[in-house]
Figure 1: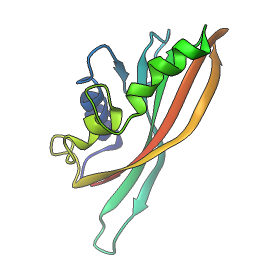
Figure 2: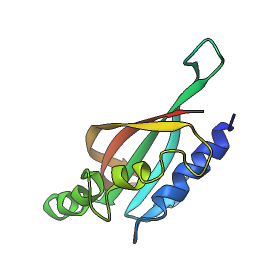
Figure 3: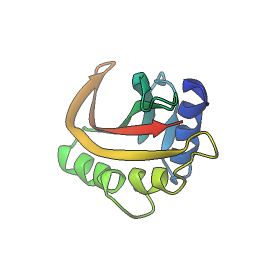
Amino acid sequence: MSTIGAIRDALQTRLANISGLHAHDIWPEPVVTPAAIVIPSNVGNDATFSGEQFDTFDIVVVVQAANMRIAQDALDPYISRSGAPSIQAALEGDMTLGGNAQFLIFDGWQEYGRNEIDEIQYLQAQASVRVWH
């Protein structure tokens, strides 16, 4: 069974395959956009009586939002279901995360909106990924 850190690293590795995207397994300081950050959100769930576990990770993708129209155009390719910059496609491209998981389920994008970090405006979206291991 893989550790939370190993799964977080494996998710980051999948995200790093997206050209131009800064992928992180911890929140970076400073945030250099476009960026995707892997955050454990619900861990330690027993999925079966045999001891199989699943853990949920949030993927937060951020772009600068000085101009909302430009920001939305910049964010849309990352939250699309397919295409070279698609986060969903990158994660589903290796459902075992390099052998660190049995499989994963991408639960889709739940949040889309502005966020301010260190007095800089960002547009972000957040998705959940359930990983069985």
